[in-house]
Image (cartoon, rainbow, N blue to C red):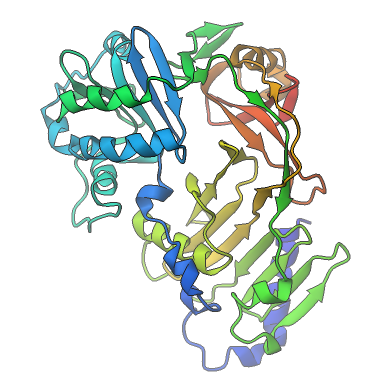
Length: 443
C-alpha cells in the first residue's frame, strides 16, 4: 500500500472522528482560506509569462553555426525582452500563410541561416502565447481561438524574414511573413559569443532522431551537485494549511514523518522536508476550470503554502482523476531538476485537491568539475540498453535530448544530484544516462 493511499485512509478515518468540524459547512473551503498568506509571498508571485518561459532557445548564427540560451541566464535576459514583441505579432501574420505550409527542406535550410528557435513548455493556441508575450498575462477568451496550437516557433532573419510555426499533433509547419524581421538580425548579434551547439544527425547507431534537437558541442564540464533539502518545522508549515491546529489530529510515523488531518484535509511532512497535501472533497466541482485559471490558482496556492521557488516553470500538464495536474521544476547550476517534479498541484474549480512539494538548494561543499560525455555517447548507451529500457517500444526514435540534474527518490537519504542526459523517445517516455560515467541512470 503506497503512502498516498495511507494518507487518504487516514483522512477518511479522521472524517468519521471529527464530525463536529462538518457542522454548518455547506461548501468546500477555497485554497486562500487554508492558512495565512504572507505579504512577501504575494510580492514574489510570477506572471504566467515567467512560469511558461521557454524550455530552451536555440540561436541560429548562420553558416550552420548555433548556440543555446537557458532561461534565467544573463544572455537570455538580454535577448528575450527584445524578441517577445516580434513573437506577439505572429497571430495576425499566420492567417496569410499558404495552406501548404513549409517543407522540411525549407525549414532545414532556414536553420542554417541567422534566426531564433523557441521551444515552449506545452502546446497552446498561438493567440494565447501572444497574449503572454505581449502583456505577461492572458486576456479573457470569449470565443475559441482560431490560431494553431503550437509548442515550437522559428523566427528566420534571412533575405526574406519569415516565421515558422509547428502545428501540434501534425507534421505541418506554417509559414508567415515575420513582422519586424530586420530587427531580429540586429538582436542576434548580442549572442554570437555564446558556447556552440550542434544539431544531432537524423540517425545514429540505429536510432532515428527527430530534426531540431541541438546539444552543446563540446559538452560542458559538470559535477555531481551536493544539495540541501529545504526543510521547515512541521507544525509551523501546517499552519499554512489549517486555520486552527487545536482541532487537528497529529500522527507521528515510525520514519519520523508527521501527518496532520482535520477530517477535510491531510498533510504529511517527511523528515527530508518533502510534503504531500490531500483534500477530501465533498461537493462536485462547480464547472470546468480553464487552463489559465488553473495556472493562476496553482501559482497563488504554492506561494501561500511554502513560497514560490525562484524561476520555477511549468514542465507538465496532465489530468489526474478528471482534474488538471500541473508540474513545475526549476534550475540549479543552470540545469533543470528532473525525476519526480519538485512541485505538483492538482486542482479543479472547487479548489486544490493535491499538493506535493520538495525543494532543494546547493550546499557550499561542491565537487570538482569533470568533462561530461557527449550526446552521441549518451545515445549509444540508450541504444545498447533499448530492449531493457523500452521492451514494449520497437521504434528506436529519439524526440528530445538535453542535460539535467536527476533528483533521487523522495524517500532516499542521498542528497547528491547527478548530472544526466535526459532522453525522450517516441511516445513520451523518458530515460536518463549519467553524464559523467555514461551508464544508465534510471527512468
